[in-house]
Length: 314
Image (cartoon, rainbow, N blue to C red; front, side, top):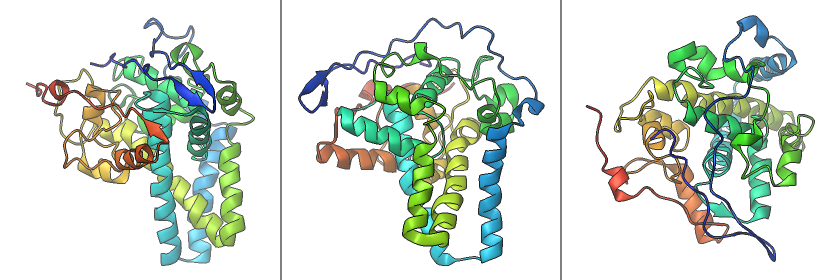
């Protein structure tokens, strides 16, 4: 069911007194953008963005070595990690990529800003590439396939290279109509939420807060997020016979607030909950339920019973 991105229509999206319809997700024909090269060479990955990526790692590691280990700092880093992971999974993934729930336009904007504070580029860029991934999961055109290009390319290499720099507007026609999201997706703007978070950590917690609350938690967040592109196609069990290598893993679900039920997700992509069973822990979905109770989001999509009880792999 790789190509079953469900319609996101239904109730209109509210923005104060303005009513905006939420159209179905209609993706372009399967042929990709012209002249896109899936994988060039590792030498193509050494550029300023790669240096910035490595610098964040270096500062986090060097800072802990120079200033010493701190249990209070580690607790701050872990707390920030899980808070930011929920925002990444609820915002980038379940809302912007799959439209698995609805919200107001102002809260949509806040979700975009909060998600982009993770340093994973604009929500339009993120959603367009993720939808392309689902269309071509573990096929030659996939953005990040362990099967095709190996673990490290699927984990981090693809995001550092030039091949996938551009945002394909054909994949995100339901999102590009919002000018505020287009502004946030601009290269000169997309990292401003990340910088704002770093400044906030510095102002609130000083150098200690900047090191542990921002740098350490950001490195953790990156690799936690990226593990779904790599490890979730390598370890775990396959409950459903999808056409890719997606797997379910409790360990990955715990460290990614629910994203580790990856085979479930590839089986039915538009669900707001990725843990289909009561015992499949999905913290992001629990947070969405709280937000729904507060009236900030609504129409959380769940898989039909027939989907949940669907066939197992042969």
